[in-house]
Each structure stands twice: as structure tokens, then as C-alpha cells.
Length: 194
Image 1: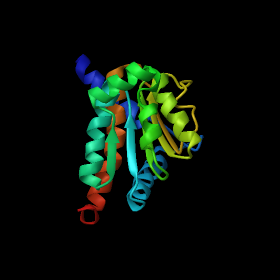
Image 2 (image 1 turned 90 degrees about the horizontal axis):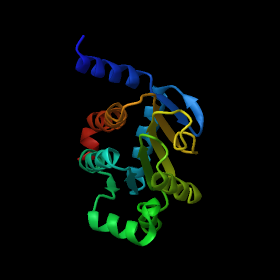
Image 3 (image 1 turned 180 degrees about the vertical axis):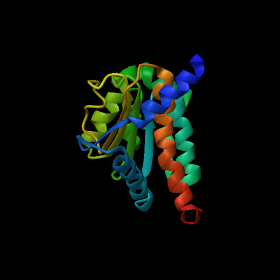
Image 4 (image 1 turned 90 degrees about the vertical axis):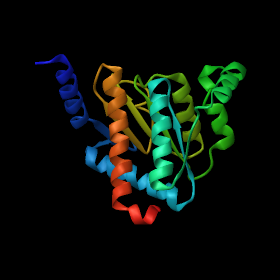
């Protein structure tokens, strides 16, 4: 069989075996995605914000999904993709606080933080989660690779994990899980959101 077809087949297996936790307790993926949807609905009803954080490919996913949440769901959604802001924060506070420092200014009660890290070990992403936890902000995490990673094992309203060892599988898988929620919610409520 073609190796590229194998890659796609492996992605399908990885997505179908995705693991989920709600408040630290393992649950069925379908239940978890329903909670994901519910968290978006709560943010919209409270006129709050969704904040996305990720590095590299995960940052690109954050940017893409943030605009989808704004465009398709009518929810205020932001990610830190401004190069001037990112380099300023990294220069002045260190890369480990490149996102958490702006969150100390922007994050408000009833906001939602979505933290994505394939390894689940990125210090700057973990710092955002820690800050949000201290301020009682709902958190969704998406991680992969090793089930012992810190992000998967942090307290969060919802955690999603993909058992894989390739960045492409992790990144496309995380995007697919988020798109599954965003697009089904958009299709279900298309009249309500526009």
C-alpha cells in the first residue's frame, strides 16, 4: 500500500481513538465534544472571549480556528499572532511568558482559553494554563504524543489527547477535533449566529 495512503489511514485511527477528560475524569469523545460545544455557547451567551495559544504549527491552527469561531459562530475570538507583540513579549519577559503576559491584561471573567501543544510540554503554553487556572477561567487543552505530558494532565474543563508520534497527525488531528465542533455548531445554529 502507498505510504501516503497509510499516513491518512493512521490519522483516521488516531482521531477515532482520541481520548478526552472533563475536569480530570476520562470520558467518551462524543460527550467531550458536546462539552466543547457547550463552552462555546456559554462564551457567546455571556458576550465573552475565546483566547487561543499555541506554537509553530499549533499557532497557525489557533489563528485559523480563531477566525472561524469569529466568522462562523459570531464569538469574539483572538490569538497572539502579531509578530511585533510576540517579539516584544519574548524580548522583555522571556519566551516562557510570551502569551501569559498579554493574558494578564486581556483575560476576563467568563472567557475561555484554548491551549494547544503537540508535546504538551511547552512552558509558555503551560504558563497560560496556570494563569487561567488561578483566575478561574475555563480551559480546553489539546495535546498529543505521550499520555504523561503536562498539558494533558493539567486541570481543565476539557482535555483532548491524540496518541501519535508525528506532528502532522497531531496538528491535523487537533484542527479536525476543533472543526468538528465549530462546523457542526455553525450548521445547527446557522440562523441564530447571523
